[in-house]
Image (cartoon, rainbow, N blue to C red):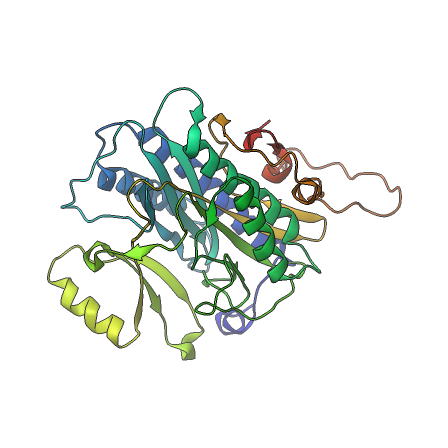
Length: 377
């Protein structure tokens, strides 16, 4: 296939090569997340940890697809962000920032990786402490995790995006928490991190998306952000914004990429001009009220013919929440839904070739309804 033909063709999961690239990107990203978590220690500078996450992704993707005829773009799809406590998202500071982590901080890690434009994203919440997480911190993480598990089961062919919006709000309410407004779960396409099909976190007059039905062979970034506060975050300081999305001319095939802003202070003037002319879209750093706690879980899911395949994730710490979803039959029914599609007929399973085994993170994770802990076999 020529380069011109590749530009015109829209690749999806019906192409095995595409599935492989998504899974390779996810494997690198899961390892990068593990690295970042291990670097989160009291008094560690956030900017240093973010840089280690980004460097790992660059190095690992740089070692893939080296001996191919066609040059393949690969690397960071979304810069490493570490947002603490009541900070909701997108905190990825510049080199001059001195912000450090403290014992007991509730940390949200958000990052993305791509190979040939096929994007894997992940967000994870971790509390900087030894032993089980308790109290409201446990409530908000358990709420986010349970909502993510419900969303995983409802984002499936034939279901509607509105069903997911309503369900995750109900789960959060069971833990006396609120889903944060303004967060969208998006369809992913090649070089497109926010496809047209989307799932609202909260329905309100300010934010609307078109009604949509999920279809086989689509890919989604499921993004769940939950707060112990009112779920209506505010922008406090525009100078904290360091991540922007660049819109490439549609004549060259629409490509959306997120990248870290230039670190020179004088670049601010250029950024303002680009934003004003809608050449760049900012990802603002938002905050809930002081004392509120915000948790974030995001994962990438492939809607394969044999069911949903969650390819990015990380197990949570032990949680001991004060609330429970045990007494809600509707939520328990959602969580009981299968992730894989049962095949009709009694054909024999094909034996996989040696070395072809791919970990199925969706089936490896089990949901403990009592405490919302995702565990990995």
